[in-house]
Image 1 (cartoon, one colour):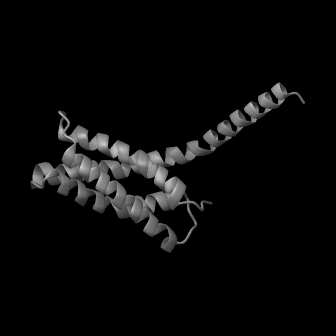
Image 2 (cartoon, rainbow, N blue to C red):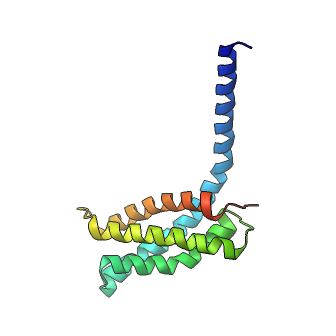
Length: 147
């Protein structure tokens, strides 16, 4: 086999691997999006309500809404999204670490990043960014043993 044929065969195998990985991850992303949508709507609504209606400042509102949605998110991610069969004692601490990291990041962003846009849009933007980071943490560290 010539060097060019070898390179072409390897390139083909790499593309095939990417396609296989992409098709395998799509159902996972769809389930993650569905569960994330419901948790996210509750998070945004609660954060907005605590700030606009109750009068808490934004970092407090974000923190309380994040803490309130965490148990719901864990249950949905474990059973619906990732269909994990690993022990709760293994996954829950990792889930909490990812949650604390992203809570700190989100709270700091809300405190120090001032955007000239309405609060509801800010909450949505930060929720979207944290959703992407959450997915990466869940997929590659928290829920590693799936059915």
